[in-house]
Length: 407
Image (cartoon, rainbow, N blue to C red; front, side):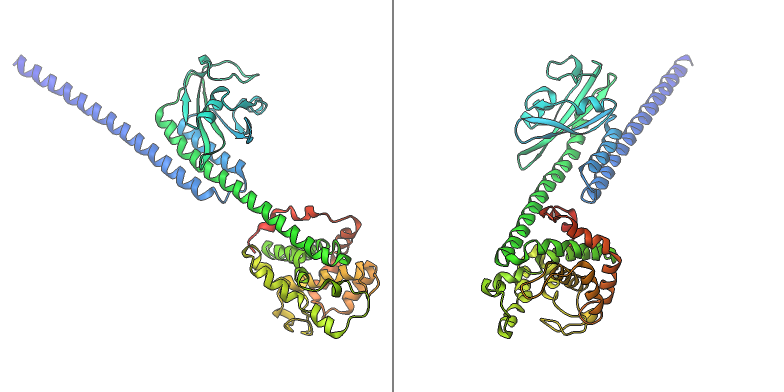
C-alpha cells in the first residue's frame, strides 16, 4: 500500500513539475511571440513613416522610442561622420545628453570610433572596465554597456548609432540583430536625404544659370526675374493658393523670360522704336521658353506658367489669345508681377513709374489686361510689394524648400 502511495506521489510531483515546466515554456514562447510582434509592428510603423517625417531628428526620435522599448537601453546617440576623420554627435537622448553633445571622436577612437572603422555592428558589456571605450567627460564612471552599429549605404560611412545601458544592464546578440534592422532603415533615409540634397543643389545651380543666361542677353532687365519671382510669391500666398501653385508662381517668375535666350541680342537691346516685324519676333519668347522648360522633367509643371504669362484677361494677349479662367492662375499672377516690375524699373521705350503710379495703372487695366482678383490682391499687399524695392533681392531667394514642392 505504501509503495502504491509512493508511486502515486512521485507521479503527482512529476505531473506538477511537467505542468509547471509547460506553463513556463508557454509563457516564454508567448513573450517571445509578443516581442517579435512588437518588432515587426515597429518596423512596419517606422518604414511607413520614414519618408513622411519632416527631418532626421523626428525619425531618430521615433526610432529611439522603439529601441528603448525593445532593448531597455538608457541612451541613444547618432554620431555623424564629417567626411574626413571625425564623428560628431548630432542627435542625443538620455540623462547625459549635454555632456555627450560636447564630445568628439576620431575614427578608430573609442568604441564608436572602432565600430566606424570596422564598419561592423558590435556590443560591449562592462564598458566602463574596458580599455576600448572612451569615458565621456562630466559623466560618472558607472557600470555600463554599449551597442553600436555603423550607418552605411553602398559601403559609404555616414555615421554611427550608439545605444547605452546604465546600472549594470547588458546587451545580447538578439538585441544587436534587432538594432541592426533599424539602423539599416536609418542608413537608407540618411543616404536618400544626402542624394536629395545633391539634386536640390544641382537644381538651384541650373536655375541660377538659366536666369544669368537671360540677363546677360538683356542687361536692361538685370535683377528683373528675381523681383518678378518675389512679387509673384507675395501675390500667390496672399490669394491663399496651395503650396504647389505658390511654387509655380515663384519659379514661373524666375523663368518667365527664359525664352529670350532664343531672341537676338540686337533686338533685346534696341533703343529705337521697334517695328512690327521685330515685335513679332519678341512675341515668340513665351513659346520658346515653354519648349525649353518642357524638356526638363523637374520644371515640366511650370512650363505652362511661362507659356501663358503674356495672355490678357480679355483674350487680347499672346501667344494663344486665351482669356479669363482659360489662363492658368500662375500665369495671370506672373503677368501682373512682370508688369509691375517693368513699370517700376522702366524700359528703353517707356520711362520709370513710381509704385503708386504703377498701382494706379493696374487698376486702369483691371478686367482688360489683368485679372481683377490678382490686381485687388496687389492693392491689399502694397507694403509687401514695396518692400521688394526697399532692399536688394539676392539669389538667396532660391534657397527655399518651397521650390521643391511637387509642381
